[in-house]
Image 1 (cartoon, rainbow, N blue to C red):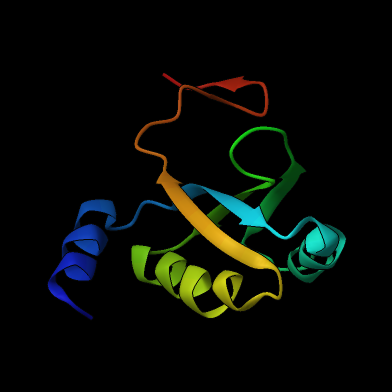
Image 2 (cartoon, helix red, strand yellow; image 1 turned 180 degrees about the vertical axis):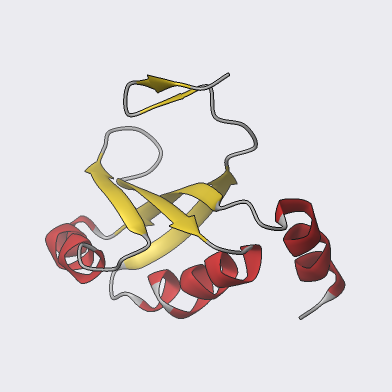
Length: 101
């Protein structure tokens, strides 16, 4: 674990790490990529979207290190994935219709 990983793990401590991963993909692989991720326990949602990215993946992990490993070892190795950008959730105000104080 490098210094950045240690800092991020300390920041999140016992909080679940939620992130949105935008993936730019070769469009002929969209269904294959989605099928590869649909049964991963930490993947909550997968959306086909318009805009800069083709797929948005919502994930939750017990640590920053686990999220990083998922991106480096799973998502980036999927056939057709050209680029990813990860947006980590800092605070949740409303999720799945539930408001948070």
